[in-house]
Length: 258
Image 1 (cartoon, rainbow, N blue to C red):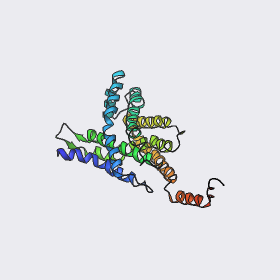
Image 2 (tube, rainbow, N blue to C red; image 1 turned 90 degrees about the horizontal axis):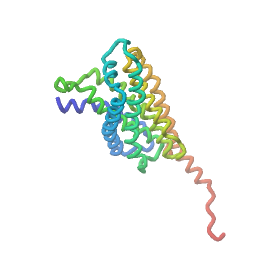
Image 3 (spheres, helix red, strand yellow; image 1 turned 30 degrees about the horizontal axis):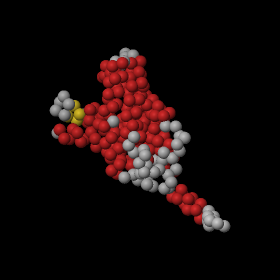
Image 4 (cartoon, rainbow, N blue to C red; image 1 turned 30 degrees about the vertical axis):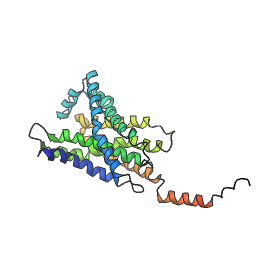
């Protein structure tokens, strides 16, 4: 049971990773780099955890988060939750995942089309969320029993949610890799804000039922970003045909001395 408690919570993350990996149709990334980015996403939970604990030291909000998670009424003040979600949890977790991609794979020669930004962002996000799954899904106080209901909820909310938030800066990295004037940090902040809003809606009892609507609104945004970046791939059939046509009509260079 001990080994299953470690493997089972990670399986949904690997399944989602395979789903997003298959969206990279024209020039799929090396599987070893995608899995390595997934592993770096797992490790990125450490700086995120330390940042959240530092934030709690400056403003103790974790107790309120625990109280909100256990509550089904609306008697709690929303402000400690809002501060914790928007100013600590969202920024810490998105920055940690962003660093795993920006300082590892971003300058790699395999990062050769805009969609790769989202592919690697998804890998880091799912690595992060998979280790979170272990902490949320495994009941360490009762013989490492698996909370199957929690696993199901997180598989269809938290895991794709982490990908959606990370796709904001993943899109920016994909653009900036081929256009140095593209600004990445506004989308990092957007990712942190969307992440914070997700946590707040899910944790604050009066807004909790709206989490399904929130995710339903976010999924089309992710799909659109993937479609737009895939269409801009230099390996797309249309792009290859256009490049070949341009090369065919380009006049030959004059020989030196003419």
